[in-house]
Amino acid sequence: MIKRRKTRTICVGKVKIGSKYPLVIQSMVKLATTDIAGCVKQINALSAAGAQLVRIAIPTRQDSIAFAKIVKKVKIPLIADIHFSPDRAIEAVEAGAVKIRLNPGNIKDKNDIYRIIDCAKAHKIAIRVGINEASIRNLLKDTQPAKRTNLMLKEMAGYIRLFEKRGFNNIVLSVKSSDVARTIESNIAVAERFPYPLHLGLTHAGLAEDAIVPASVALGTLLWRGIGDTIRISIAGDPVQEVKIAKKILTSIGLYKSREPELIVCPTCGRCQWDLIGFAQKVKKLLKEVKKPLRVAVMGCVVNGPGEAADADIAVCAAADKGFIYKKGKKIATVRQASLFVALEKEMKNL
Image (cartoon, rainbow, N blue to C red; front, side, top):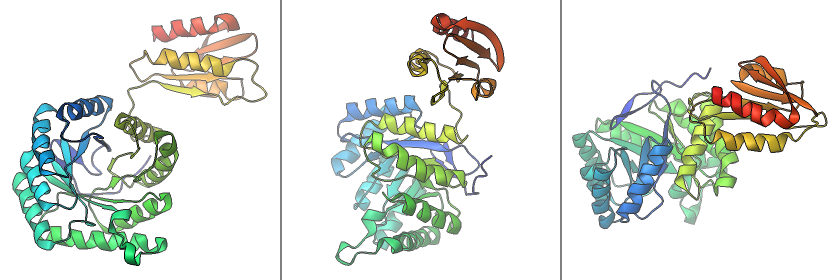
């Protein structure tokens, strides 16, 4: 069982973030904030998919005005993503953001930061100090990759000092990179030094099909070490896919209890004497109709079949001419290959 790193608890509206609470899944709207109807539709889709917080970019005054309208049309807590402009931060807080994200790479003036902190404190909202490796580098005199973790740590420490000096500790931290190893290294360094919750992400991870592996490696490694209290999978594409990938990562290491069915499938080898792949695809299609956490195993032979069946709600282990159906680890039927799918479908409906 994973032992979470102890952190403070912070409040983001009604959502609690910290080691005493379950991991929080986030995503971000991919539309112009001024497209109010489109944003509301996307936010509702993200909420339905399992997101607990949604972030929206606020680059202009018009976006602040639109954000205030969006807040009133959705139930899920909204985070305002702020870059460069202290005024946008103040506007977002006053518009109803439960949390704002500030980037030390582009809001640097101490008086501006204090003004934002005071406003956040008055409205009792949270702030994420979010450092992206790409945004804090001086490209005229660039920092070598091997020294960028120290650079992010230095920037983070300087920002946190300002918050603590102002008596504000309702903060979440994040350090992100598009490099897997540096994402892991920098988050470990921040986790060892500061007691605040960490928001995890591999920034600019790529298209969905390309992002899954690096995001899973980076975030999975950190989560397994007990590091991380909220996550976002950054992909170029439908944000609902970000939520689905996040849930799969968390489910795979026992940090999220999925309400969806799970299909375990044998990879096949020379021992397999039937069309297991085709059968499994039919089962997967069938499972789309299931609205409960059902574990189903489709196995190719008796080497691992009975063992996987013991851990499944229902399982199939088959050979060339016949198959065995298991329920809760017990063999309940021997069926001819031609009738196996129909028999399995019947048992699944009974469950």
